[in-house]
Length: 55
Image (tube, rainbow, N blue to C red):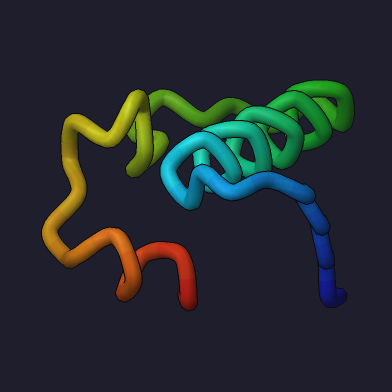
């Protein structure tokens, strides 16, 4: 399965957070749990903004 989320913004961090929240919400709607979600307000990021935004 491929999932594509397009967020129109000039803020790469905001776009990443918005897309992450949408995907996490969709997973929860299917009954999945995400206790170790890797991006929670960018507290666990290990790359540059460009690296994370291009992932």
